Image (cartoon, rainbow, N blue to C red; front, top):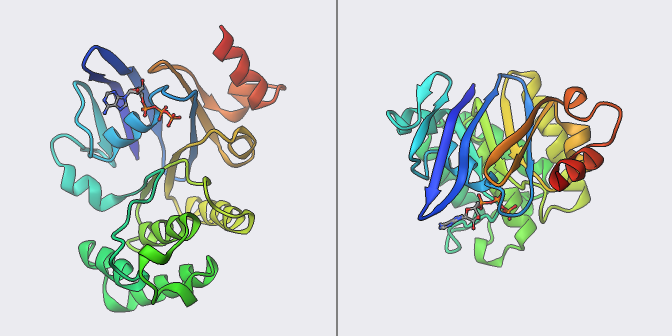
Length: 235
Ligand SMILES: Nc1ncnc2c1ncn2[C@@H]1O[C@H](COP(=O)(O)OP(=O)(O)OP(=O)(O)O)[C@@H](O)[C@H]1O
């Protein structure tokens, strides 16, 4: 579903991502971990077609992000680390705006908005302007808007930051439900306990280079993910 081949992104003199390859298959929850500045957000933005890159290829469901970014964007949802939404809109207007962009019909959008807004306890706030939302409420709205067009691939940058424990739990359950229907999920996180419990596979990036990837068992063996991560960071 998401195939990254030899991705390299350079900012000036800095190789933020260096020759990175990863393959995320349908139905997988794939965690992406690394220290601050390791290159996670850069990789994620390149996958979503919002950041150009110097070398390599990225394909979404067999379609090149470079050659056909619009087709790729139709298939994926991106939830950034800092939800920068249109503050002047109300929550419901924003959700309808996103549904319009993706051409979601009236029945489907109503059903999905109802389902996810109720689930994340945001229904009562949808009539409020987004400027009145807390960080966590904005994060919930971004998550709901990402699910409106039933994407085949969901890419999230630090999705649990700012969510309260109940919302975090609901997001994890939703991720499992979506993966059971074949959706692929690729997300970055610093919360290694969450990655360890939630992910089928994990990749560790250090200074732009992939240093380890595979199933959770392959990567961590009998140790904890935290122990493995810290050991690799020190090497
Ligand atoms: N627009 C930019 N211009 C120049 N350098 C950048 C730019 N964006 C990121 N970088 C650099 O690229 C490297 C990778 O940054 P990136 O944001 O991808 O890291 P990250 O793994 O997401 O970090 P964090 O966990 O702190 O969010 C860092 O050294 C960063 O300083």
